[in-house]
Image (cartoon, rainbow, N blue to C red; front, side, top):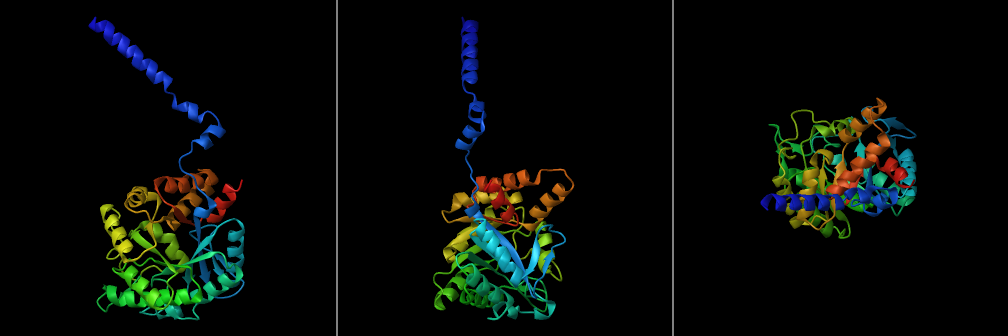
Length: 341
């Protein structure tokens, strides 16, 4: 009887297994779409753009095929096109001439600097697009670091924060909608929030690069801005790529200090961190699909090894699936066009 019972049980289990067929929900396009869990929308995309001095010039970044440094006149045309595709936010990064860089990044808060002039021009040309500005010293520093460097090579935290506040207020005065501190100095979110509020810019938001890792994926970006550090690395202020729990600490601190949104950077190798952050906060979570991630896809596509469009959409969707609400990506225009099909 024991053998007979086992046989009946086994048969029952086998029957139950066959009655549960997950493939029923994959059998055609309509049902796959209906049961899809993660959705990428054009409104989720933030388009990073590089602006440089001069006129009527567009220079391709050698390590980022299809991505360009634009002079302001041509940048405005690119912003218009992005907005027409449904992209509602751009992130602005300046490529400065060397003579405008110094040890303290003083050009960063020049009211007539490249960034400030660009913000005003964008808001005059496409008033409804959100302008997000980078707050860090590396594009403005003669040393290429995100902070002020002491004589013995230390990155000075509090002295840097003072400059970052001036920078953020200057960008807000020019019309920035959101400032995005990417420097990873301690206490800068609270100081910037206080500085913005005291200057009357209470409606300007802060997108904090809260979990920004000391990553090798940034190489092409530094090529784009010529902002690689002149010595050493950024490991004393950017996070250890091996750490995930530390990201939660950084997120908590930035939220306490007044961040309106938080970010994980890079994205693709840090999907687990994006997921942890998503579970930690109800604030909007951004992921930065960084230059190295972009360049690897472009390089493989140029070799004919992958289908670029499909890989782009799969990659961006993975970030949404991990928990990102917003994605900064150099593929933003391409993704917007694919989503419109």
